[in-house]
Image 1 (tube, rainbow, N blue to C red):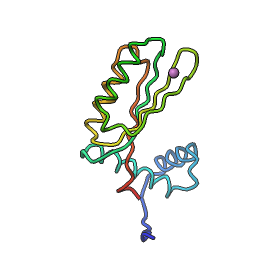
Image 2 (cartoon, rainbow, N blue to C red):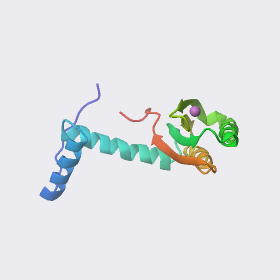
Image 3 (cartoon, rainbow, N blue to C red):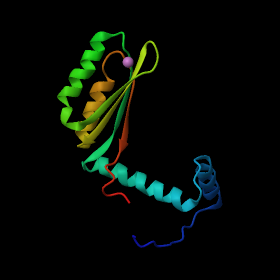
Image 4 (cartoon, rainbow, N blue to C red):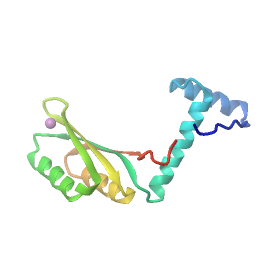
Length: 138
Ligand code: NI
């Protein structure tokens, strides 16, 4: 078990009230867990900035009737195969597909893959969820 340290934080009343409202809306049971998550978020951002190995997911929404689009998305994924752990294709409705591309690797290469996929003509929405391998985050 890692040692746990306690320390005090000084905040003005207004900021503390805003923080308490924020964490209440996010269903945190206490300030400590909310504060730990804020720190972890910053550590994950740092991993992306510092070119460390990262993990995450790219979500794409597109119309599957556009067959050329489907081929293009697949071709690009083959080009970036070393970054891709797995791809899940979900048929959302008659027209729309959701593709979730799970990634692990260099942040700059992952960003390039996400940008390349998202900018394909016909992709309605693309988003990169920047997460972590979790190796250096407690
Ligand atoms: Ni589909």
